[in-house]
Amino acid sequence: MASKCIHCKADAVPVWDSTSQKFKPFIAVCLDCFPHKEHHEYPYYYKDVFNKHNWCFKSMHPSTPLAFHDTIESKLAQQMQVALQEYTPEQSVLLHGVTGTGKTRCAWAMYNKAWLHFYPKHSIFLTMRKLESEIEKGFANQNHGDVIERLTSCSLLVIDDLGKERLTQRMESDLFSIIDERTSNKRPTIITTNYNGSGLSDRFSNGETGSAIIRRLKDYFRIYGAAQ
Image (cartoon, rainbow, N blue to C red; front, side, top):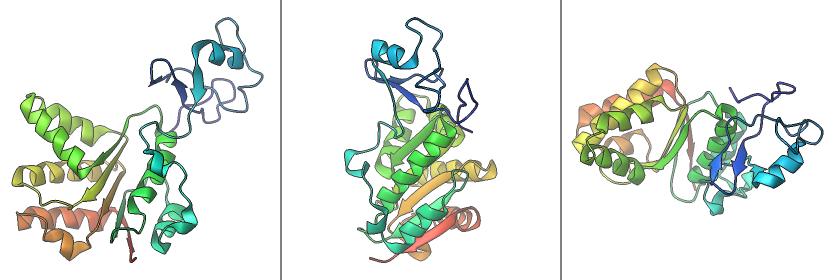
């Protein structure tokens, strides 16, 4: 659950330090208490403390690409609109459809909603290319196990563009481990792909691993498909 305001126990809003470019997870205050409650340090009132330290509230994760800051829900494909309306942060969701249906935009909107819900716990949004890069770096730096642990244990993981490129057997094995452990422990995951079940299966070099991953997607994910 989201961190709670120390004054009223409502959901606190993440506080961003513009100087250090980091969040301040121990500053827990809501927007209602901000104008009239006091912080523990001089000059006490939150507004003055925020001005002193160059802090501000952030309701959107700073890694969100600028192109996705102003999503207009009505411009998404119908099934993406339904997915956003039905989404709750505890869900695992698969969004599939051809390019231009708004899958990635929808995934970022879901990510920000879930990030606020889970903050200050760690959430991760990766394109498939970046996921592969993270795993390759893990092998190169001899900390592959730590990379997989971070991806399986974070409060929310988003994988964008699954299947865009054919996967190596090593990557397929790691992807299965990540999805299997996350689903087994009911940790929410959001995946976007251009492919439906049969099309996605063809992107795997190992048919058995591909089938096992697709079974878990069908069993544990809410699936929304959109045509252009």
